[in-house]
Length: 368
Image (cartoon, rainbow, N blue to C red; front, side, top):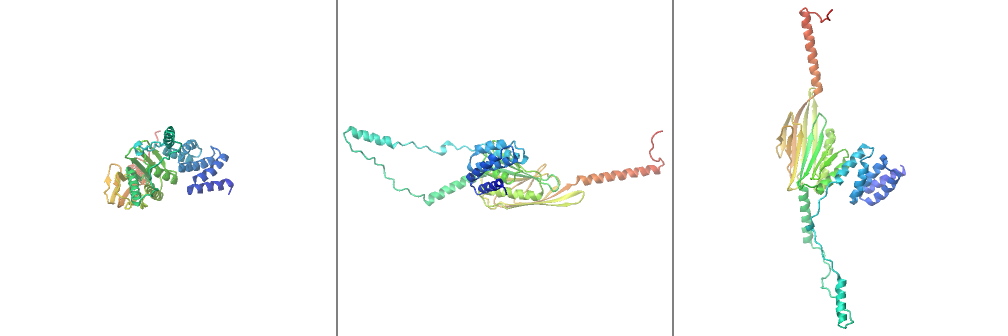
């Protein structure tokens, strides 16, 4: 292993354990040897962006992401654009009435005034400024600490719950799945939970595409993938959502079984999401949209019934329970149907030609 690769591994290990300062020291030296627009230099700077984000140096990360949006590598360029949209999203402003400002006390002026008054009376003995006794600093009591913890947990739950999450599962053709998430904050601003969730999800799945606006709305889309990869993606998203919200791990299972009958494909979709560990949170709205709705038969959906719409099926999840869904679907195979139609047309043509010969017209001839 070369020195450059060895240093790069050291930087990655430092980021993994949260030692961003040590990682930046190593990466800055590597960046000097690998300038942009080289691909190696772009990879090094992408790691530097991660370290800066860990230290809270958002401006340095934004400046570097803007440079990386012009990188030759399409995947690195896409990652830079996604991170830039997250970093440039507006943050929540803290109201001024959340804090108080104490007046500045000038003990020196107070003491000098006492000294000057004593000197004017002819006294040369320095007067001692007596401060009111306060006693030793007392530690926080258990009751107060518990109250603070309860308030912080309640604020976290409320701020995390004021959000509407819609997961869309699209089945465009057999053995292919398209997944997207629409996240909308009811406060019309991006919540800390949203930023944390999208950052971790994009880092774990770089092929995802994020679009957001200043009104607290985000859309995360995936490319068209196979059902097995879709299952892993859903489990990963639920794991990150659990960690970001401070809940226990959300268990899920997403499977699609298919049976090819030449003229079409019979599909069976099973979806199970365990939300028993999540408490009831005001403002939290979770739902799943399944497209297309053509030729779909809902076998079972618990605890909430599924709603059949014009071109989709809408299913609202219930927090605190296990949500199960089973759908059977049928999709025609256009290639097989086309082959059958062509075969029928050939048979009809041959039959008409034979009938013409029996009637004595003979084969078609060109005019003399």
